[in-house]
Image (cartoon, rainbow, N blue to C red; front, side, top):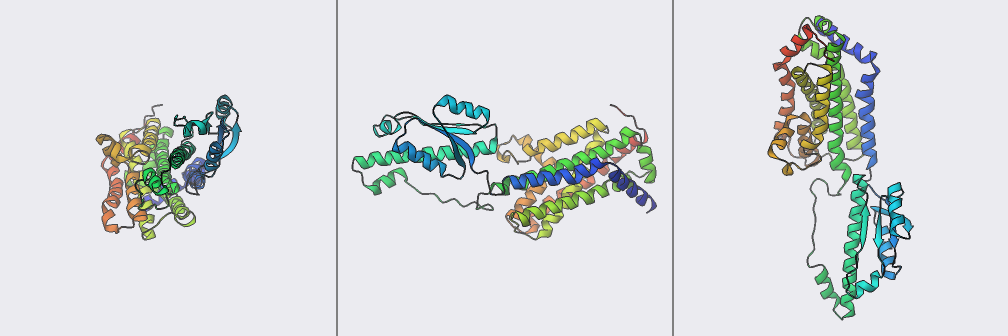
Length: 386
């Protein structure tokens, strides 16, 4: 108990003495979480500023403009006289895209000469670009159907036959777990835990590497009675408490204030968050056992934290990956937290069916003990390599 107290006291003193710890453990995770949650709190990016070039000025083109401006995704804030003027506006950042209506649109359409309606989207900003592309494409399809409907009426085709020709069947979409098609639910439920995991990996690697870089690793081990286990517990437990408190506060924001779906016992997700924190700390210790160097160990943990956005299935569907990339995704803890989130919070299934994912997070805490001798050896003979 004496050695545990010494090690724990040393870990707390280091947290207090370096403001960077408070910045990376508390301020930055909360700031990133609030930014992501508030960015699309209405469900998706809406009212993207776009422009329109109407060279036809007919009743059809004016109807297109009114219908386009009625979409929630886009907001026609500028009207331009020609293509060059609209393109320059996009390049200057005044608008993020524009809809181009050519000359004689109505005349050519009703005459069967197939006019071309164009739209230009700035995909440098992915989410707004996707929203305006969706709006532009939808209105183009509606315009095409409207033109065909007008042409068929002029030749005397009955309305019922026109409707069955244009819409031969109807579809009903039922989205399980996200019936409102809320972007906030399926984006931030993955991105925010991944950001938190990145900070945990970075802080853990930084705190371990600092002992080797500053030459205080022998003193660190001496305070813990020469036990690598007690040394790691004393250093990481204060960080665990702070990271867990931050993670629980973020979950409170998500499930209470922003109304994320929570179809399970809240303790299921609270326990999952605690295990995520401990598993990421253990994962960083394991990486540091492989590469016991301040610069290389920190870079390795940061790299794995960044690429986990992709190979864990957050930004690219798991089914579309190469088999070896898909398998690589199961080597990081945040993957199992994501699976728990889907099973428990979204689908609300019995916790029995998620037991493997909880066990996997617990398993990450055991792995560093297998290679802790390597880290202890490096601490006993510290050689700083810049």
